[in-house]
Image: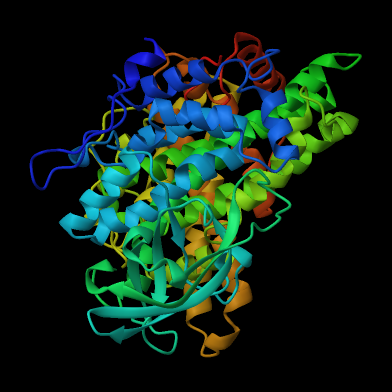
Length: 604
């Protein structure tokens, strides 16, 4: 299919209440096929003369500019249509498919993925969740017609510069008067609409903030001041700038949802952002980081020796990446299948994936050695990832924010009777990447934690169920026996976690809970990652593309071994050849030009 076939003239629907005709015709196929199409459009990132390759992207980063040619290609592809629900004229159905489409972009340039893409969804998702029909139509039309929309977050006590500064609103004739200032907002100097969290009541209560859709065409120019770009260490090509509103009159119909609903809306919509940051940006970026390290090892004097130290490091990071993707995909598919239950899992996904992949980046730097500081097109992208990935992982909401969601859940775990019967397990559909799912209904997102299994955490119950079933696979060989033993140890940790939570929350000095509770959050998230590994392994189809690896024990065995050491468990030595075989599988994917994630998609 030629790119020309995707372009069409912008227009306005003659029928009242319908979105304007999109500038791009729908790309045939599901998220996987659209991801493959976009991967091929972007081309080989290391091919000489590719305008969307590493040489061009790194040069733009050095100039602190957006790579204009690639941004234009994404516009012609209609990336913005991926963020608009199908009912409003876009392509957005499930977030798992959206994460797949975003990965080719994030594998090449994390800053571009945010600046030219995902930030728009962070803003629009608030409107998809609580906006009225006019607001939904207007935002859909704006995105499909090439406009830009960004988000102005509320201020957090424990936050980075992106989350500092705030706006306040007071009632005025015909609406509100808004004023305030934020110094660091992505695309503040380029957006023509802002979804803004604005303080409408004093204090820090749940009704302290409201959300407004600020469309610059409806605001007086003298009240809206775009501030100069902010220089950032990471994501240098993204347009971070400031926005100041001075006694800005805002019409009453700019209010999204109800007055005082801002905190609730942030809790609801952050579930989508956390899952996509993890499953799109972090996994996609780390795929490229690992690829740089595999290349460096292959170009060394001895080459990539699976039995050598480098082979062991690379196999370990490969196992972590697959495990993080297993957890991320489970979180994405939960949003598609049962979004009302995604509050706690989405926070756990973001917390665990950010922490694990941050550690892995340090391991890869050791493998790269001096090449890790190379600024040329062959390896310069690694240093860019070292700068960009921490911003991607922390930009919209940091560790303290996810802990604030997860710590209260520990009290629920303290009262959970862990039985692990099949009826309590999360369904296999959560752990089957690419399987059919329903379209995400943003309005079903819930700000209150709800468990579909009567108080039993379905993801941890899946770990218990998988551990029990693995006992029957011990006779398949030493690696399956080792995996069954590890799974049994992790099942014991599930019970231990519940006991620790019960002990902690029985103490009267609740003010001293924080340090111990944060340690238990770490353990809880690692157990969820282990559960996702075992469940993906159990449900993988060995007859599918790349299915032999996922259905085998090696990657899950190495991942759980690494998790066990992080948990302080006594972990036995791996059976002979496990690490070497996984390193060889990694090298095989590299030489066949396949991605390192669960999907193993062909790369350009």
